[in-house]
Image (cartoon, rainbow, N blue to C red; front, side, top):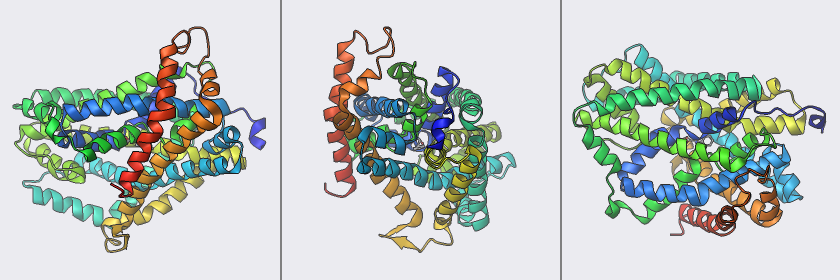
Length: 455
Ligand code: PHE
């Protein structure tokens, strides 16, 4: 209750909010995962499905989360409790915060690898002549306790350093520097990629529509990607919404976030695949793409040293603005509900997330043989949070807004002025209602059933 006496932190400008939310969205999911799943699941056909899911569940739920946060001006726990008005919803709010926190613990491990590779690139250690050398190097580093835990620590330290300064001077100000820099690096890499011989092969891999590659699993991958990429279902957007002024027209400022996030992800895909195909290599999935294939490409190509530094800088920046957004819900909870000072809350959260992330960091070396349900610790905890807890969080928020609070009441918060997007546009209200009340819950249940192995 102490917090009621203090003025809540808030964004300084609309652009500040947009950069922060975009920073959260553009992360390892968009840069590392998206390009590959596109290439693998039907190129333009997959992108089309992904866009449909963004429109049907991504954008509406993003708006819903921000409305919940803004109307309550509290962390997800307080916001869920205030709107749901009972213990169950308070508990749901806690679950959502917990999910974000768990994600931040292992996200930092992978992000730490990216930071580590940025340093490797700078000191010129990425010169390999075949892919087994590149892979060996990566396995040596990721299984080393000092390297993996060390960079996990360093990355967490950088994230907390930003959060320490609060919403305006920390998240907003730093995102306003890092996001334009990130966009600039993407553009440089795309220009370089397109200027390479046989760039068209990369474009073809990424963009030509292959409907025969679209499988039921692929459809669910598109659905899950639309969800994860907007940082939904784990408190981030509720928290970012809680710092938003009551004057902002939410759909209008969320729209550019969704569009830019997609444009950036596609551009990164173009950069990666034109670069990979220019050296006649076939891209592999997941970690191998970044740590095995790309270093090889950088070794072979002209100006490869600089391209490598730029590339790892890009991924590290993207991961940093996402990591802070995964940590912030817990910090805002400690400030709101426990009356902690931001500095204490940030250090505590960072330290705890670092500790909980250690077993994930060791999952590729020391704890390789330690398994839970047949998965190593990292795979287990990332599967649990990304595939189970995130959709569950999304489901809870949709139910809260559509059925507990009531769509009508939620909509009242969107009519901020006569000029607001919601005024005089009955079809907009219809669209949101349809998506939030009927389409989203059904689609999310499908994701969960699939993940839990029901079909
Ligand atoms: N949106 C981020 C990405 O695409 C992932 C993320 C999820 C970040 C949750 C923070 C919180 O990588």
